[in-house]
Amino acid sequence: MDEYLGTIKMFAGNFAPKGYLFCNGAILSIAQNQALFSLLGMTYGGNGTTTFALPNLNGRAPIGAGNSTTGMNVLLGEEGGSPTTTILSQNLPPIMSQLRVSNVNATSSTPSAASSLAVSGTTVGRDFTAVPSFVDDAPNTVIDAASVTFTGGNQPVNNMSPYLGINYIICTSGIYPSRS
Image (cartoon, rainbow, N blue to C red; front, side):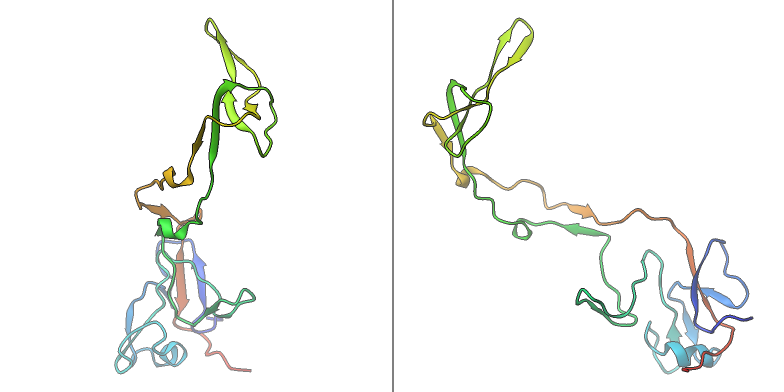
């Protein structure tokens, strides 16, 4: 086999070819896989005395290890992320707004800083005739920001990008890579 030991690749089959194993977190014997253990060590688990683990890419997307240009530092073997996130009110910016409304007829279709939302149309039979929606008169009612409440039920939101299930396999029988 001309593959480097420890190389991970995607494989569309439903089995791991000869000389490969699935990247499913399997625990392997160090005694039976000394060369592979010398490359992976305890990075992905095991007890380090008699066993070590393969990377587990089931349900995960790989990301390059090291420092990125965005300042994110990912260690080799580090797991992170979540398929869902619960967005809480403290995760959202504060909303400070007032809604100004009036019960007089609208005089303009363009709002200004002093405008109030006003009576905006007439009904004739079953038809609605749209007319301007704003008035510069003093508002009859100002709905205070304190009366605006948060909504939602603290339910998890899906974080998953579109995906396609495929197997990741690791070479367990191949050329030992040199450092040069």
